[in-house]
Length: 435
Image (cartoon, rainbow, N blue to C red; front, side, top):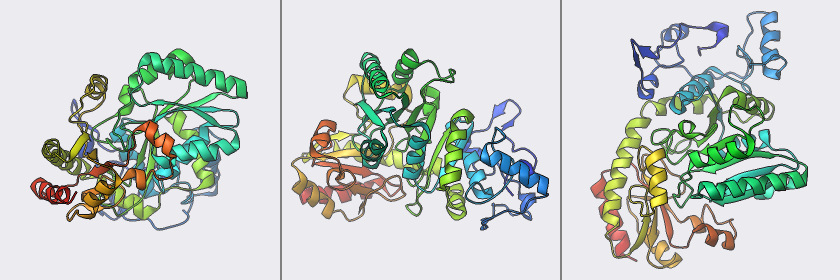
């Protein structure tokens, strides 16, 4: 049974003496008591649509929390559209990685993002966001939310504090003219697919100057998609973000066998998101939650190996005559980006942009000749993946916008897996020879 007040086991151990246990250790049992499930070492998969209440009074109390009649959320299991043991254990472990008070899991990363936007944005409001974003995220803001009177102001990923101050003032003026408010600052760092970093600390300072600090109940939340570096190589809450977003499909799931997403942050931000999720559905199913719990046990090992492989592969690619340049965080040539990396990141990741000399035909020839690396979208799996964003994931982005954001026809996005690095180099060598 999950660690819920309805049937609460002893508290999970989070420290021994003065030592706070690391997330890697906590992933093995945090939030789960085997004695509540017949001693099963691993949590069972709870395949049920509904849960029996201990008493009628408990049922009423649980629903008071679900509906928001009583603040703080429910303290019992009610119905699988709202909560469940596997989902609650998973959410507790995700929150550990991000240093957040709470986390919420969703059926996909885009479900998490869409519910997040819809929670905080109303007609007349303005969303401030970095660019580029994942095409579906940018499209939801520009095409879907615009139908309901929500507009946006965007800025390039590497914007300075002075540039961000101007953007915040523009957003305030636009919101005032529309009779709304600035609803959210939404970031993606590193950006998909260019790997450009956002200075979260500068964004926080600009937000605070324009709207008030995070402790102000009227402040504008800063949310960030941390999929490319999280949860191992970056903890955005430590740098000023309020809400962290993931496609759990990627590094957290890590095996290219599930689709899920999450948001995490302080309870004051998660409560309204939870309320909308309760109404709309979109919670991750029990089996997917269970698979993610399995994956979290090895996420540090997998990401570490993939990161080491990427460093070795990129060192080889950087010297290849058919490679124009690399967008790899371990080889940054821009002082501003390097400064952001040094302050915000603990590792360079394993997803990078490979710019082939030429254009789409040359990129296609490279992709079509790969033998070990798979020609597929997505990233963060155990296997190496490669794709051409301009022709695939970002195909729907207008050409003018792609040019503005640096999403060129020769940009190949590569996600390095956990294979033997020398085998990957051999694969890339023979594929480049075909260009």
